[in-house]
Image 1 (cartoon, rainbow, N blue to C red):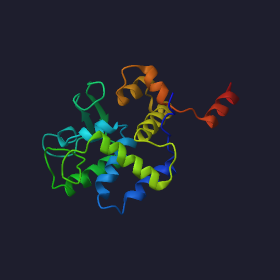
Image 2: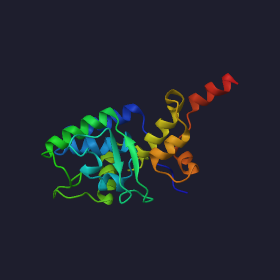
Image 3: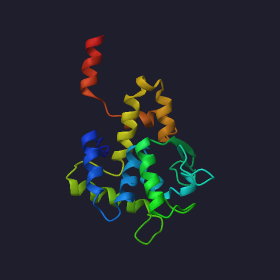
Length: 192
């Protein structure tokens, strides 16, 4: 069984975001990272995301992403509330792109949809440049799922909410994504 993608710490995520700041496509690259880490999107969903899935009918940024079934792994549409940091990054990208009403959110060098394989390769190269071992295009998604699960007690939500955000059909799939926390486990045992 292959090793699961590494869950990144907050410092690693900050380093990742800083690393793309000076790139030619810095605004786009920041959005790619945040779609993975702050919305839990898969590479195919990042590649397939279009502006109508992000914008309201009046052309303004929506407060949630609407992932059409045509871009999701299981063909089931889902809605994901926008994280404030992702919302700001999407506003900047939308303005930089000339405020389009349609077309891909993440564009290639040729101004077309990036393919899922291109997104996977983009993450692979970015992690390798930073020397982050054990990371893949799924690291952001696994980090998102793990963090949302850990924040459940503060939000009043349930594991079912995490499952819906992730777009998993079965709860056991969501559970496999969640990385345990040894410090929290020690605290739990002390409370027993």
